Length: 279
Image (cartoon, rainbow, N blue to C red):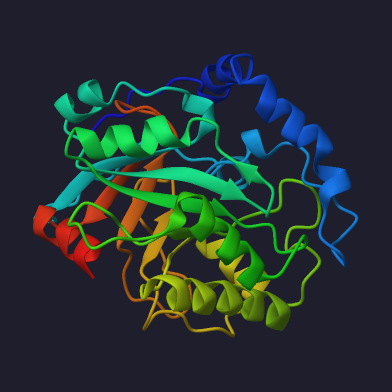
């Protein structure tokens, strides 16, 4: 399948000019709003942090997908404030069956387009889910899980809602691993995951890239038995799995294409999409 390649950075820059004044003000005030004991490394541009924004910088793709015979995959997408208001009727007409939408970052940012994106997908029959961009240097995993659940990241057994997703990738503000040791990072992710489960009864999906996971967890934490995996790899195939997962539930295979935002494949037919939604 040939990808319709274009400069995603150029397209997304045009979106930056259209972001609301409230969003820009939120970003400007974040340094003053950091939780007690948080890192001095401020969260200053959450509107530019989306699912894979740092993956594209660290692992640029070839733009060529390897066709895998006899593998059933279901197409979907993920979006953030960069896409603004999404034409969901068009997205559905082009074949998308699921979508993840950025809800929050740290404990003081919410996507200003979240309601239109999240509800809009649902209204045209697309299975939807929310995700949280992790900043482990600003507050605890549990605190960020609580903020996420309180601002759109919850779950309901309605057959159309995925469990929330934790987006954990390269730090857009500084140190790759947010200044944490491998053990510290594993504990942070575990704190988020456990708190999310306590609040919703579901384990969050974890989004990451294999090389980041290896570097920042040291392959010392095993989340494979509880947390579904969404894997980013733009080089034509999912590639090697992070420790100790044996397969990905969702593959983010490109940062542009037929759908707005990033292009995803669910590993299975639509019945498996529904199964994840239903728990």
